[in-house]
Image (cartoon, rainbow, N blue to C red; front, side, top):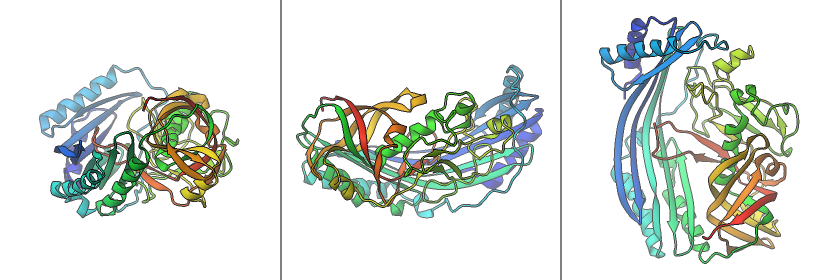
Length: 451
């Protein structure tokens, strides 16, 4: 890892080299370790260390960005010059006011020594326990176990200098039986809090119960959605309209809805990068302090998240949600949904005839302004009859408005759960959503798969 002191040294070198009006440097560093397993065998064990720098040059109202992972003087100089050259060839961005200025950043306990030092042998031991439990039932285990540490540094020529180091761990598994499967995961900054046995048993139980699935007719059903499925909903809401760029471009479902009811009164959704129940992080990719933003309050649309560019357009202050991209704009990376007072068992018991869903996959947007998405169920779909899970089902395709589904929620679980995002792809930066399980009275299934 580069470390805070060396990052400061490199930042000052970049500022000295730059002839731009304003200059920003973003550091993304990682030590990433990954163990994958398939067919009940470890087939990949890799470790990667990388450091990437993104340099932003501001020339008037033109902005250029260039990157490198080389730290020598010649490479840094070339990267700075390229960023300035790119800026000079850009059209003026009349919305741009300035890079952000220095502000106080809250320190958070993101680093766990035991996670950083977690060895390949320890990951292999966790995989072994999952594999042995699957094999004892005649099933096969697939999945991934990853641990690592990442560092993020942001500095600019207006006085921002932020640096943070954080660890994270993520375990997921799919247990596959002859004619069914089950999924489970665990995530957090402290690898010791990921209970391998709990993850394994949850996936194993679903695989056992998923054998010999039957088909049901598509139509409108009551559904019980586990946290994984709910997180899919919340993340799509973030993508389709909880960022200020989409709102300003009038392609957000929040347009004309602020202050109005858009879900049931039992739905409250917010983003909070300082809450340690999620993958907290104190600042965004511009070095702006994270702020808690209430998005939906008891069913009422309340607001969206901002970076410095979108905030400046409305004479607002950034909420600390920059992704570092003017294309994607600000995004809520630390979503939370308020829990209720129910349990999964109570949801099932209250259902006369419905469908239990573990998670969704292959999910895509159909109509963003109406929050309609489509996708399929996966790794544990069951029929509920007269308050009991009775039979496993072949997977179903759904086409559903998220906001309409959230307008018909009758039960919400007491204990929201952190669901981690992704494993082994792209640069390491831990993200996740904290969500409960829910029961929804009306959910539209439009097709049946062959498995």
